[in-house]
Image 1: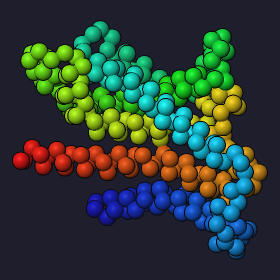
Image 2: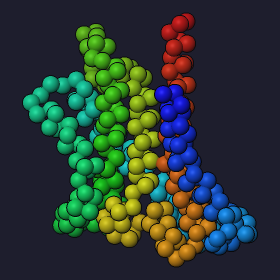
Image 3: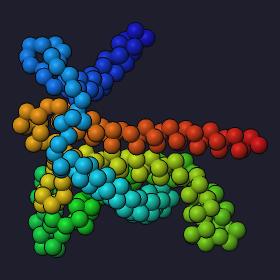
Length: 263
C-alpha cells in the first residue's frame, strides 16, 4: 500500500512538473525541430521581447486581477459571514447559487452577460470587465472566507458584542486579526483565477484591454514557441506565485500567533 501511494505521488509530481520543464526548455530554445530530443540552439527569451504589447499586457493583467480580487473581497466577506453564522430559509440554495459560474458552461453564461452588458453600456468597459472577473473568482473567495469564519466561531464575536463593541470594532479588533490569513489567501486565489481568464476578457472586454492570455494565443498559433512559452511561464508565476506566498505567510503568521500565546 505504501508503495502504491509513493508511485501515485511520484506520478502526480511528474505530471505537474513536466509541463513546467517544457516551458523552461521552450523559453531558452531558439531552434528546436523534430525529431531532436533537445533544442539545437539556445538563446535568452528576453532577446526576442520586441513586441511592444507584452509589457502593457502584463500590467493590464496585474491591474485587472488585483482590482477584481479586491472588489471580490468586499462582496465575499459579508457573504461568507452570513453563510457561516446566520440562519435563514433557503440558505443551502443561496450557497449553491454562488457556485453557478463554475458549474454552468462559460460560453452560455458569458453570452447572456454580454447581451445585458450591451444594454447597460458596460460592454468593452473596464467596469464590465471587472464585474465579470469578480463573478468567476467570487466562489473561491467565499469558500475560503467561509471556512475562516467557521474556524473563528461566533463565541468571540458575541463576547465583544456583549462588552459593548459595535460592528466595526468587532470586525477590526476580533474578526480581522483572526481572519487575516483567510483574507490573504482569498486575495491570492482571486489573483490566480483572474489572471487565467481568457474567454471572459475576450468577450466582455471587447478587445479594448489586452492581457497575457489574449496575447498568448496568437503567439502559440503563429509558431512563436519561445515567446509563447515565456508568456505561459509568466502566467504560471502570476497564478501560483501569490498562492505560494499566501501559504508561506499563513504558516509564519500562525507560528507567530502560537508564540505570542505561549508568552
